Length: 282
Image (cartoon, rainbow, N blue to C red; front, side, top):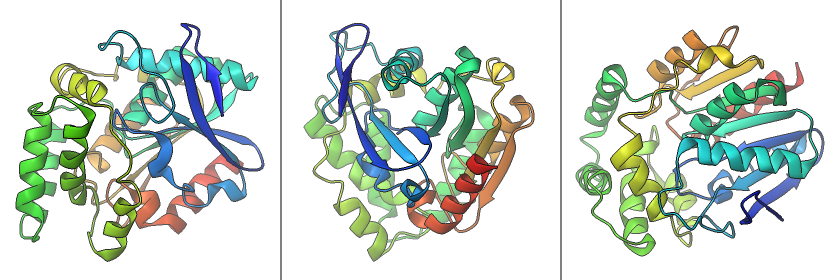
């Protein structure tokens, strides 16, 4: 399904399930909503509207290759809300999508009825970097680790110019994002390998946004009941990140899912489903 943004771009989304609408924003940046799959079967209780962000899947790229700022994504999310005809919406953001969801809920507090922030962060500071290094050290003995570390370094250094050059790098590093990487996790990644990741979006984020963005001053503006959920073994957006978000969002609830990394809805789907569904229905 699709709609037109206020600046005339076509944006697409997947619609799945039935029940109250839950708008879902994926991460990356540069990934479509494909990796959500069925989002831990939340479609059984909710109508999932899974946005393909600008420049992913069938969503058109902006003319300006720098138009992948956090607030650009916020603008697209507001256009989606208007397209859906929702006065207020339940909103879920994962990873970079959680950054967008936080920024949206702070800018448009009256438009969000419930907010789920999954595997995300308000900034990447010294505490977050230390947690990332500890997580990588824990994985260093794995047979895939050396190659994953090398790919992550290449990606963050911007050693790619096109989507076709970026995608193999990302898939080499993705084992890092799981608490345990085995046959089931490899099979999940195999289902995603036809996707081209948006190189413009990720390069801009890595080079100019990742080490400088800081949403902490926006968090007090969020008024929606908020669930912050993270995997205990997430090396990039784990408990230290969840704690900092909860410190800024008044009345927010924090849940740490055991034996889960960044893709907690894949690794621990039942726990993710139950925590999110209970929160949205309470």
